[in-house]
Length: 359
Ligand SMILES: [Zn+2]
Image (tube, rainbow, N blue to C red):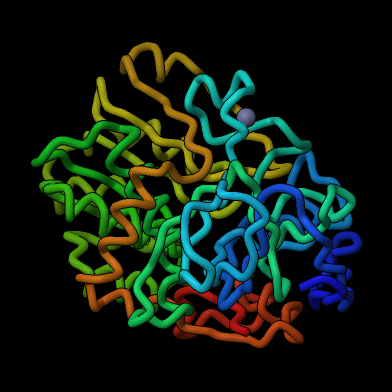
């Protein structure tokens, strides 16, 4: 591949995407992945809007990557050339303090060692899924996925993995536990699927008025209750449907500081709140922490998906045909700008479930 270049969409600064290319350099370690599809998320929107803290531009966005192994410089990759894989968003060096503590936020590189977050000034530049090729770091974790599954469908393994990590693994969900998911985006819907699959007794999903289609889908996917937090009182809706307070509340809202107040209010005493939503530059105001103390709550910060989640998600691709309908919008690489705007809901929310760029 010496001498080849990869087309890439570079986020030069907030709201400024430029089409460019980077050389596929000869590697000493790792390899090159030919990207087939990349899902977009609220993180990409925050990077595009400039509301994500600790960001270094320029960077190539996109961390929900699916592709084929195109070149390997050493044996760190562990799969033959041509294998279709899902690449975990977080890269682990295995040696830093964060990695030693089994966290998902490796700090070998700044600002965080993860795809779609590293600046293109970091060698060898191709760290984001909005490019024809992505560097496979030796610390990347790959999961083989069947050729029978369209690449665009396989991108949904990423939110699905997060749903498992956040709604099942971190809060240690037990069969019969009741779960309220705040936010019906791809990760919220995935939290619903993962919780149900793990035997949750009741799962409710809340959203906003513009989330009508996503809340309808949540119902079809088995939610016991859906509520529009702008049109109805969520506490009453939960009380009427469940007759109790949920054991676990997962906050997967988008940039919504109010959701934390509601999570703390709604969860049962002794329950668990999983805070998986980043609030960007929005502060949570008027937070009186006595509610955490007096209710003896567990508050868990959740960043990214774990390998157990990816393992589960990859298997679900083979067995759950409902996943075929989860990516509602596809764009070519040249329209990456529009793809991010669609993810942000700026092109309309009708029938918007999730967005991917395909190659
Ligand atoms: Zn590390």
